[in-house]
Every structure is written in C-alpha cells, then in structure tokens.
Amino acid sequence: MLREVSSPERGVVLLDRESSVIYANERAARVLGKSLADLVGCRLPDAIARRPENEDPERVVEEVLENMLGTGSTVHRYSAPVRGADGAVAGRVEVYSDITARRELEKEIVERNSELAELNKQLQDAQEQLIQSERLRTLGEMAAGVAHDINNVLGIILGNAQLARRKIEQDHAAIKCIDAIELAARDAAETVRRLKEIGKPIGATEHQPVDLSEIARDVVSSAIPAWEQSRPDGSPKIAVKTRFEPDCIVMGNAAELREALANILLNAAQSMESGGVMDVATSRDSGAAELTVRDTGVGMSEETRDRLFDPFFTTRGAEGTGLGMSMVYAIATRHRARLIVKSEEGKGTAVTMRFPVSS
Ligand code: ADP
Ligand code: MG
Image (cartoon, rainbow, N blue to C red; front, side, top):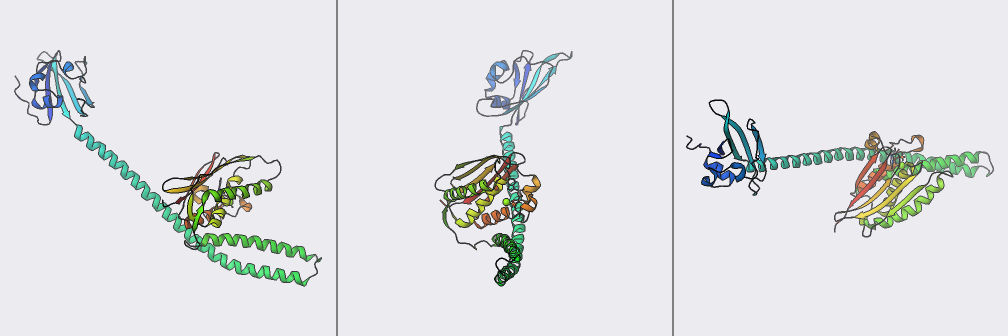
C-alpha cells in the first residue's frame, strides 16, 4: 500500500490495532534505533521501552520522550488514530522527530538569557553605585567646605571665651556661661571633625598593613564598657558575641578603621534599646577580608536604608547627627572596601565592610 513516506526529518510509523508496525520509513528506524527489517512486523511497545502500552485508541497523543534510546537523545512523538472506511479505529500513525539538537539549543538560549539578565543586573547595580558614590562625593565636598568655614568661626568663639575667662574673677557668675560656651564649641568642633573626615579625598590618609581582628578586638573591648556605662541602670542587656579569624590583614589606616567600627557598634547598640544580641566577626576568603557587625535590633525601613549614608540623615531626632554612617562610608571608600548593609525591620541589621586583599 505505502512505499516510502519520504521525510528526511521525521520518522513515520503505521501501526495496526495491536500496535504492530505495518510500515515504517528509514528515518523512523534511525530515530528508534532499530534496523528497518527489525522494526517492521514487531509490536512497537515491545520494541521500544519508552513507547507506552495500552494507550486509549481514540486519543491523539503528543509527548516528549527524554533519553529515549538511553543515549541522551530527546524524541518528540506524535500519535493519532487512523480510521477505516467504517469510521472505526483501524490503527495509528506515529511520527517521531529527534529534537535533541533543538533541545540543546533551547537550553543554551535559556542559559544565555539568564547570563544576560545577570549581567544586566550587575550593570544596573554598578550604575546605582556610581550615582550613589558620585552624590556622596559631592555631599562630602560640600561638608568639607562648610567644615572649613565653621572651624574658623569656632576658633574665634573658643579664643574669645578663653580671653573672657581670664578677664573675670574665678568665682564670677558668668564663669558658668563661659563653660557652657566652651563645651558647646568643643561639641561643634567634634561635628566639624567628622565633616572633614567625610570630605577627605581618596589617598588622603596613609595605609599600612593592619589586622582587622586586632582592631575589632580593641574597639569591642573599649567601646562596649563605655556605652554599657552610659545606659541607664537596669537597661536590658545586650549580649556581645565575637568571632575573630586570623590572617585578616588589609592595607588600611588603623585610626580610621577603629572610628568606623566604633560608629557601626554604636548604631547597633542604639538599635537594641530593649536588649538583644550583637555579633562582631572577622573572616577571610581568597579575595577579601571582612568585618561584620550583626544586631537583633529594630532594623531599618526601606527609606532609611536608601538614605543611610547621606550626611545629616538621622531618624534619632536631636540626639542623632546623621554623620556616623556617612563617615563609615567615606572611610570604606578610602579603603576601597565595599560596604554591605542588610537590614529587616523588626529583625535586625548586618553591616559588612569587605576589604580587597592581594594574596
Ligand atoms: P545617627 O546615628 O546619628 O542617627 P548614622 O549615620 O550613624 O546617624 O545613622 C543614620 C540612621 O541609620 C540612624 O538614625 C538609624 O535610623 C539608621 N541606622 C544605622 N545603623 C542602624 C542599625 N544598626 N540598626 C537600625 N538602624 C540603623
Ligand atoms: Mg550613628
């Protein structure tokens, strides 16, 4: 009846009602991994294990058979009933296509796509970081400019306060006023010092090999007793855990790094007014040394996280200066360190400084 269904791409098989092969073309034999002579006459479900037995004779089936011949090949199978003149099902026609190559291509496209998406994301991140660092640099320069002007004024205030002190009796009632002026001026000088830190350009400070673990140990042991003391009696406890790894040597300025860490620790402590756990750790991998401070405090809202490094941004009202994290950012930048902040409202915050190290 049929001679050759010439289809170089697809294997065509005609089955009788018992699923025995009445006809198969060359391509079908190749796709099914048999010789044409073996294929014709055999029951197809016996010949190929992946061809299901007992299919509903009325149904049109379309499916993909993975690893059909055990050689990793993927085959698409189309199977439809063939009816005789009386309308009853007389057998089936099945079309087999080897789609292994297409599948691999598809997989490759999917992989390429996700690679592209990843690259795109990296590009976006880099752009955002660039915008952020450019903005902060401008703000830093502004801050440094303001600091210079205020410094001059503060010098005049302090100088005159000291002159006034010398000119009046030591038990004069105005002495208290002069004390207040001096104290306020010194506080302002501290703010100015921070502003100047923020405005310092890259390369302004000398860098030497320093041990992050040593710095962390120092700051923890000096900072923690200090703020424990400053908290009102009976305040809920903050438990401090430390984990310091050896070999966390980075090129840096120890004084700046101590200052940065002290600020991060202070923020962590302030976020845990009702107690919690603070975790200070250093670690080292092949490309970087890290310093991480985790707290179980109040965490940050999205807005706070976005503006965290802006000079003068604070959520602590008159108590905050909003200069702590800007200074940390400036110090990290001068050390070519990445500053990574993860925070969840109500759960806590983790601040990591990641320093590049050359092996
Ligand atoms: P300040 O401490 O003077 O407010 P900072 O620059 O140190 O300024 O911090 C800015 C703001 O970032 C804080 O007011 C606070 O809202 C938020 N913040 C910083 N660190 C943390 C932290 N560990 N947990 C929760 N919020 C934090
Ligand atoms: Mg702070």
